[in-house]
Image (cartoon, rainbow, N blue to C red; front, side, top):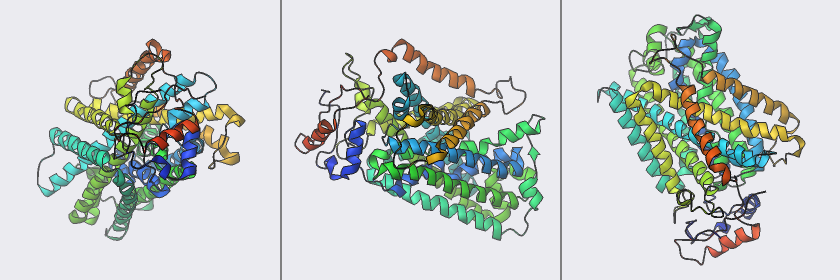
Length: 541
């Protein structure tokens, strides 16, 4: 039996008050219902949609696309990448339907691996955690960027590295407080964010189509190719331009990490994942098309001479300063929604990963893991896990004071880490073949085709992310730091595994039989509110 301080929960609201079938399904996977199961499928999808943050992602990355390929690469590249991402998300959704737990990807890897389950779980978990922390950092930086842009447009302050980092830290901490104390707000914010992102995206699209007195030609809007890179190879520039879509489409694994808080998760979570990607794909291509045709002065707007951002400049030139300010503010708020979704998802991953660290049968206390896997009394939120995510993101943000290049490398790790974590369980599911037990949502006869398409895309994307983007390559300011930084981080996880973790980490483990888990939940209404005991010495088969 685990120490009585392992699990903290609001005992006045027993877990069995939720849908019995959902609780039974979680028992089958080996865990008691500790988190509050109050999210609908729409709100589950809303959190993932807010993390993709189509209006913020396109606005942040559009300038990169103007330089790396131009309108042709932005428009057609987005369509290609969106289709590949939809394949990846669909393959993940199929696995999610079979294993709806907060652990998500690393749990899937352990269950799908034929051999070395603990090792697969360990590395998938670390890829996922590190990628999510960097993802939060990227969203916070984007929010700080547009907050500063709005302040500068209003004449309130002058943007500097210090003001950007200050806004970054404040935004991350404030959203951390919301996630910590506003359990009910998570779903509400997720739902609102869908309408916010969609509404302002359409507002931008309509304004850019209707208001400007001049639009570019079809050739300039859809076919024109611009190689503004320092490389002389058009194909290389076009490949770099694919990063616009690739770096925008991340975070939809949130649907999986929120399954223990979602009603009918075996259907709602995978459906939400696919819908979030699909809606973002359509909105993204409409936004990019509208921006392409609204360009008034390519060179000036690509440089962001008026607002510090190409999209801001296009809006100001095409629609006017007033509407430009409104949209810059709307993008900043959209990115704050994105930070909220990232922190929520990241904390649930840390919580789930930690509860499988918090073993007691190997002679170790693992006190930190027990704390991180605790659920706070009353709020039903893993509060300490939330603040580990906040701290990790803030540390990355402060790195920007020392080196913008190093910070950008750390952010890129978000994409590599998440993509790799996404692909591992899909690969293992494919290798398992017909032995894979499908859930209620699946791809049927297209499962293998979609899955292998997804895996090949991730291998290609991971290579793409570490390619140099500026020539000459071997200088302090242009060296592609992403690969060495990534190797160091993952090398640390590998060293930890080899020297220590493989001796005690067994991957996802059952906390008891369904009867024992039900008994834990039944007792919650009778034990003191501060503590509840849970069996923790069973290893999942």
